[in-house]
Length: 420
Image (cartoon, rainbow, N blue to C red; front, top):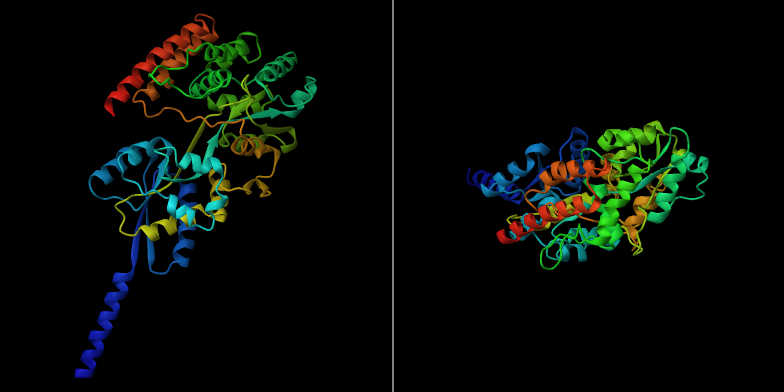
């Protein structure tokens, strides 16, 4: 009986040790959709198979409620180990000293050296430390219709703003055709910001003393550029009200030859246009030889409160590996993060070329919107949209709208600075 008792005790001890050794990681997904969640589950399952004893619990938050729900979880002590971190939230959590600096992990990672320079730069945008590894980019580049350009006698895609204007003019001389799918309605802020920055040669939103740069003389030239596109008839008349669906339809229907958009527009366009009829080029550069395409991204971060930092890092590394990231990028619709990804047959096409050139070329500097301003959403959705439409229709000058925008943004920046 003593032997049996000892055996039972030993077995209980082993079971207790095994249970104690098991690790559960909490991963929170915040940009949720059925497709994305299934892709995430697949990559996580491979990680679990390669890491016996580690289980990953995935919590998927609806995007519309994700910011508040995550904040509530964190403030209540229910902090995940790993979180899907949008670029617009990074400053909040990194600034609160809540995230692990991943630089040392990246330095010792087999795939750290293959992360693109812009991937690392974006991950380090808060305080210069890698508080996240981005998993892909929503980056503006220029779609162009090869047939329309050829028909208009445009020999090659435009590389500069002047060439872009000239090519748009040439296409607009064709019956019923236009150069540019202008987004004059909802969501058009990116276009105005990009053009102003490109003509100004800088994507800095504020001066050292906190004044908006949107009404500087060369920024005003960028605003005037879009106004000229519309008022000279190089964009459809009804494009003053166009949003995302309208500009994408305007391109794939052959109404206009140029469209600046993120990779998510490619899905609808590729379904409706033969691949040989269109391609994607980098945004045209301005007088300073630079262009400033807007960029959005999200990635993986680790909270400092984790009790399992090494396991959490291994999970982030698995999610960020070249193979996993390629799968994620193709299924979700983002530009991948590793050098050489553009050699994958899926991405090695004219339809992806422009985005990779922007990510790898010095002439293109990604622009991150100042979403840290409390009223930025109101500004883009209301103030900018309404006054931009007035400018397109000729009831306000470029200088007038630029001054209006600068006053609003300068005031918002002052409020934000005071709250820091």
